[in-house]
Amino acid sequence: MPEFLIREPNLEDVPALVLLYKKVSASGGLGRTEEEINADYISDFLHKSLARGKGLVLYPATEPTKIVGEIHGYTLGLQTFSHVFEQITMVIDPAYQGQGLGKKILNALQTEIQHTMPGILKMELACFSNNTPALQLYLHNGFTVEGKRKNRVRLTTGEFADGLALGWFNPGYIPAE
Image (cartoon, rainbow, N blue to C red; front, side, top):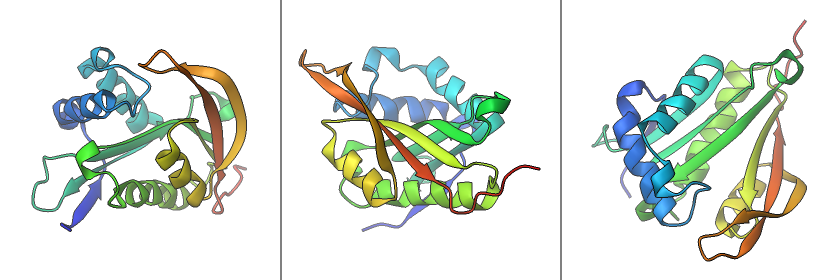
């Protein structure tokens, strides 16, 4: 298996991220349709992640412009929720799934939170109940299911899936003074 590296994203990554997100959406692994993914959508979450959160991209060591995975999240920017890192989205190119890359980038984000954002107590994300591989990944990495939103997600088949709220508590949390 080739070596994969992780770095922070930048605005020059927008075109590659649009392609990645469209691939993942086409495979049914995202809560957005391909038509809903564009440069504005990607730029919006990149700006928020750079301003008040964190983002990471995963790429083959030999091809630094080929992004095969991405994860990001941020705080809402409100003092009341400043300890919560949310809006987390993770995507792995379908051609690279099942190789441990989701675990690699999720672990890297959790490590970043612990070491560079000690004021974050909790990471929150949502997962479709029918996305068993993603759910297992999150549970294996210390997330717990905190709630269920019945029939929250309408799948492309017209069927419904529950939305699951998951949380992970930062063992490196240091309360703000």
